[in-house]
Length: 282
Image (tube, rainbow, N blue to C red; front, side):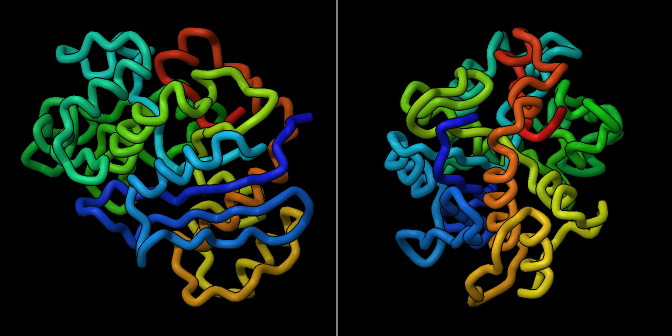
């Protein structure tokens, strides 16, 4: 059994700028009450706001998941950015990305753009897309459908590249101030940050692959019910970001005590420190 009594999920964004419609934070407590959205300090969240909010929660019994990749692949090729980095751990990669990114609000778009065609695919001018398709160990686990794309693919609606490298910048600023699993052990008190993939929560709620977005109150309540959660308080707007965060927070609460999710078979010591793992992948 974990010590967590609060559960939060963050739908993240790597978009340029300082305020982002694509960020949503949902929070719930132990029990069966539906998660509620956490209001941002201003109209929309900034990434810096999220970082500050996480630090404010550091002493709370909170399990929080964020929907971005916490590292780049390492195991298959022996480097995060072959021919460029000598980073031997994910923590070193976070520091490297932060040092080489000048974007506002912990953004990393310029980091990718400066390396397009070498490490990142941003369009046809960069060459053959398949040459950029490399995955982390957790992304190849099971039926190989736990992530829709790789962090080296920075084009298309499903891409996770900009959000993930922006997330790595935030992780660098949180490093040593808030435990981050699996790089840090699961604590016995206080908060813990884990990587999640909102589609895993959608599958657990009975939603079919390829149709995991909830855009009305009835659909959201039906999915929450499958996770043992009561109906939610009505939202002003039913956008993908808000409903993804609410459903993922409910799923985290329902999954926090599953020992198999904390001890996946593919998570050896090298994977743990170089690539990390998506909570929910076994």
